[in-house]
Image 1: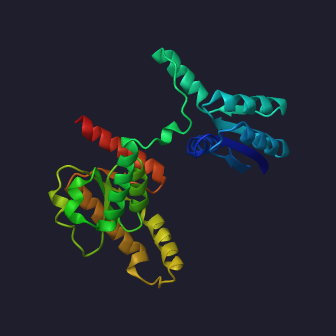
Image 2: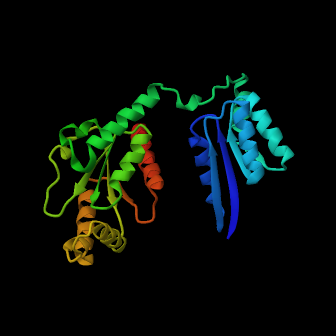
Image 3: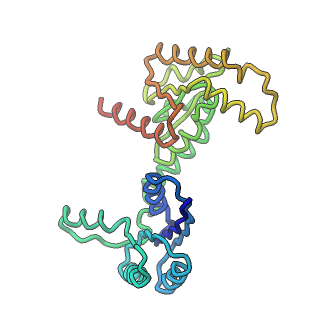
Length: 270
């Protein structure tokens, strides 16, 4: 397997450059990546130290540096080392400059300013945590979206991801023999989305969960016939109330969240 050193250089937390790197690398197969993250880079001295490490461990360099006084020494140093050095932001910023007809004002870490959007995300995360697994049913109507599904269908991690996007997400579990909270059927504002999964895949996930908890596996919780019945009952419920359904069997949390966001946008346009 091929090994590659990847140097990620950022004048902020490194979140942006890391996301771009991972999204790009997923296009390539058998490559072992040794990642070196350099965050909060805002001085020439830091760039010197980075270049020394790059010289010892040559590899592809990606950066998100907005200050030209910091960018230039890094680019020059990489050129001297014959190392590829690519800006994540510069092509986008340059195209925006041309389109808008005005110069930008470089602000290192500007994407992490404590603005209204930031505090909206914090509020959304608080909402998600207090409305996990059917909690705080009396305030469900304050949600933007409510996810409903049987156990282990990734409702909680999906809600957390949505909360990080500033979306107030709640989730309600479907438990055999237990009715829906009456507050759920009274809401008029939130989008309600049914979450389902292939029964066999669900049984595998539940078995792993029981093993981790060191619990007995001889239970209806992992019985394929019973789990299939759970899924069928859930589908009938979703159909009864005409709730949109997402099958998460082959979806990542990000893909499920993207589908939820599409449904939310569609609801807003209606």
